[in-house]
Each structure stands twice: as structure tokens, then as C-alpha cells.
Image 1 (cartoon, rainbow, N blue to C red):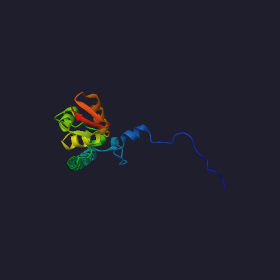
Image 2 (cartoon, rainbow, N blue to C red):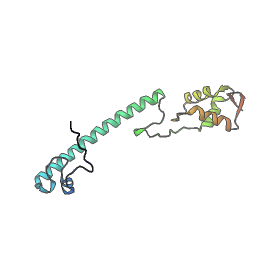
Image 3 (cartoon, one colour):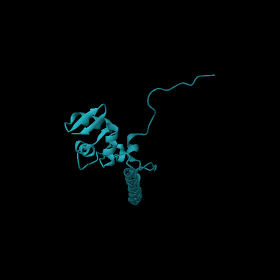
Image 4 (cartoon, rainbow, N blue to C red):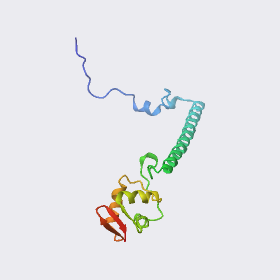
Length: 153
């Protein structure tokens, strides 16, 4: 049985003039079209663009509805289109929110991070508990009672 010979290098492609002259893969070169054919092609492309815009708008509305449902369930904080994180806005900063939740109480880091979110603090951080822990350690308003237990001073 004979082995197939592999070819090296680039495969032959159409010339650049033909590539530029093609009209959306229709097969007929734009330069050889009549004015009425060009008008029909332009109209076809504009109609296709309008259909795509309507489809994009419908999908954007559906995505907004899903985002609202997620927000109502407390999930994925500020994730927006394309997976890009959008930082949520809060009325108070984290330290102020923690002070309000911890006032005259002693809680663990996990408890206080959950309580501050239940109180309305929004975050898109995957490691929110760690951020809360760092804030409790650094801010002078909080006093460490025992290992992992804090209160507002």
C-alpha cells in the first residue's frame, strides 16, 4: 500500500481581487453587477442587519430579566454582559456596614459577612469573607474578642 504524499505550504486561494469583489458569498462579483442588482443586494443586507438588531435587542431583554431574577435571589451580584464584572454601588462602605451590623454584638467572620449581605450590602467578590476579615483586622472600630470573633468597639 502506497503512502499518501503530504503537501507543504499554503493551499491555493482565490486572488485578492475576487475576494474583495465577492458579495457576501453569493458568488457574483460586485464589479460585474448592474445598478439594480447592487440595490437589491444592499436592500438584502440592510434587512439582514435589521433582523439581527431585533434579535440582539430581544436577547438583551431576556438577559436583563435573568439578571433581575439572579439579583432577587442574591446571586452573582454585579456580573453583567460578557462576564465582565460590574462593581455594585452601596449606600455605605463595607466598614460602615460592618459597624452597623456588629453594634453591641459578637459574631464570627462568616456570620458577619452573611449578615452584612442580608442587610443589603451588595458585592460581586468571589472571596467576600476574606475581604470582610481583612476589614475587621485593619479597622480600629472593631475589636477582636477571641479567635475569629469580633465586635464593634
